[in-house]
Each structure stands twice: as structure tokens, then as C-alpha cells.
Length: 179
Image (tube, rainbow, N blue to C red):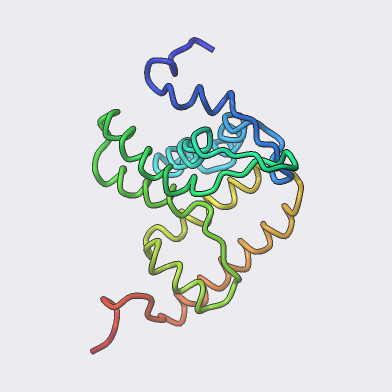
């Protein structure tokens, strides 16, 4: 409202102007971002992740012949942009690394099976996996009702599987192998 983003975060202004013409979304990219920030806990890493999770959508937007918008590879490009922006804003390396990783994997989906969850824990990081679950939930809550119940159920099932893996102390990376 004050126009501060034009100076500090001009990428956000582009998000506010970008419509998401597909069944999964009912808001512009910027409005969806605000809703997702509201849906996540009051944590610096989580809030920054939600602010930047769709930062590349304006650049990556394509519209097919049916008028449906697609944002292929916005997660990868978003991670690159997030790293640049957070460095520009002088954030510490730990925060940058965590937020960039979560932005990169914010759209990573899997069936709620132990092998898939272990693989995801390895890719995302055991320490960041609970954050990843929060990010996916907030992102889903800020979308349209289209398949929302199924998406939320998948997140809950993945969480249960994750907790079972922790309880059984299953190995998810080479550093944890008992050799």
C-alpha cells in the first residue's frame, strides 16, 4: 500500500500482477503468497519461505491453448532468485540456505510410502523436513478448494509416515549408516 516493495522487493509487485488461471488457484500469485504467509506459523524461515515460494511464477508463466496457466520449473528458478534476493537483503547464510532449500522443494509431492518419504527426507534434509510439511500445508490452504482435501490428506499421511520413520530410527542418509 505504501509502495515500499517497489524499492525493497520489486519482484513481489510482479507477483501481485500475475494471475493464476488454473483450477488449483483462485488468487493472483501475490494474494496467494499473502494467504500462505498467514497460514504458516510465526517463524522467520517459514515466513520467508512462503514469501518467496512462488517468486519465479511471473517469469515462468505459460498459458496453453485452453487458457490454463502453467508455471513449470518455478521452484528451481525460485530457489535461484530467492538466494539472490536474500543476499541482496543481507540475510545470514543459515537462513538463506534453509529458505532456498524449502523454496526449491515446496512443490515436491510424493505418495505417503516409507521409501518415498525417506528419499524426500534425504533430499530436503532431516532437520528441514518438518518445515517442508508446514510449507506444503500452508501452500495448499492458500489454494482453491480443487482437490484440497486430497492434498491435505496426503500431507497428513506423509507426516505420519515421517514420524514412524523417526520412531523406528530408520536410516535416511549415508552419514547415519551403522558401519
